[in-house]
Length: 463
Image: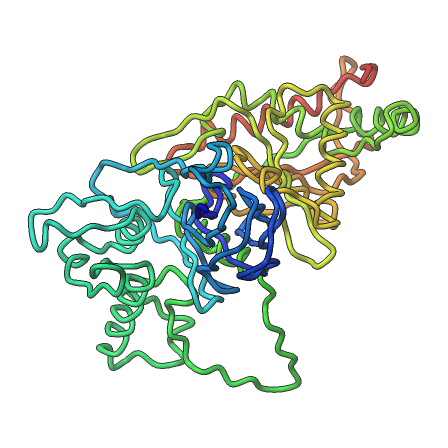
């Protein structure tokens, strides 16, 4: 007989933990290899975890709603093997990337304040939360160990190594856990508020507070008195995660937004002319989204800095062009499936990828890999009638493009015979970018090139 550890699988470089939604097997239940054992949720997508061996569930180590770091053992399976299990049945050790530098103080990030057990999104560069590393320190207990997740939270919250060493740990051998450090941050913020006699319930929403907390959970909000005729609706799990992700992004990246407009008459006319034939021949619809993605992928090659991420003082240039497309769900929530290597598809391939991912998103059939590894995001705010928008960057990316609604307008047209006025299909474009590494010259030039490519669309092209 042998015991096999079932571990929380790795699901992408930016995913550090997952929430257990439901156990489909209980201790004593038989399980086959690759049979689903539990359902989990991340800030990207819900998914299932299969068994890595055939046998009997011996022990379950976490409960429903527990937030579990990637790579942690979540259950034990007793197999019938007399000797060591087949290597292919062994759970794969999570890839560990330990940041060797001393943690840096960076912009605040946000934890999931809508759960009792908070979730914390670390900086790029950490891929596991359960590995112990020894911090570089000149004071205090130099033999104390901290996980990368704890060190990352400390860096983001401006907690010095001396402070960190003073925190009482409730983990194994006195180790400081995520819960310990988040509670410390909460207590520190609350202590600062209590020390200010002028701080009142009304001032919390209008008056800035030093060392602003980075999550809804860490803010001890005064009791809100609901007046008038109101309905109180609790956020669902996905909305809580979206709220966390958006607030964290605004705390992390100094946002700058540039705007331009494009005459997309040739593109609109061409699509209208071929859309019926395209669907009949290719078996899929041609929307504006693959046309936009085709242009974005070409322009990214000329401006690689918009296809990057930031790790402290390092710029990580991404060689792959993986474009995410923000997709609205019937529930009103939002998900961002990713087209991997978008520059390697022709227009037909892009159209099929876009329609497949959008359909799977609406039917809750996305797999974890469908939302991972995005390097740039576009969002079509025009589909809901907006002329333009100021989108929030999808971390850890550094830029996001918004396309507005296409409207017919009278515009001045320059011709060899002189200026004239014509009715054209016009569209506003906006690009939000991280000013830490993308300056106005790069951001505006990239946006202008996209507009130029759209305006120069060949109305006689083949697809």
